[in-house]
Length: 66
Image (cartoon, rainbow, N blue to C red; front, top):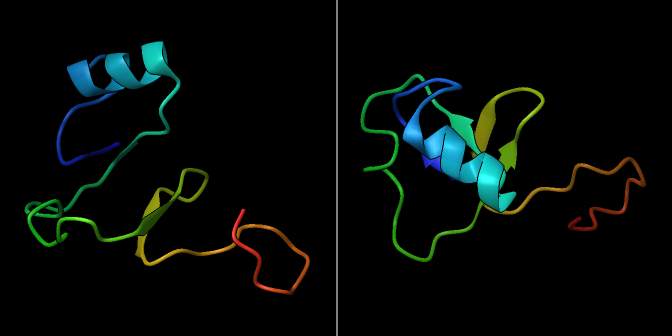
């Protein structure tokens, strides 16, 4: 889940916590508007980043999507 506004007590954060969906709040207005329907994004929850396309977060160096 990607949200443009809100904090830990926001509705989006509560829904994410209850359902186990990874969520990130981006500090950029219109961040969601820049995404296209069906586009693949990767959330880096540790760094607080949203990347266009699929990215690997494992260290195997083979580029596997995890």
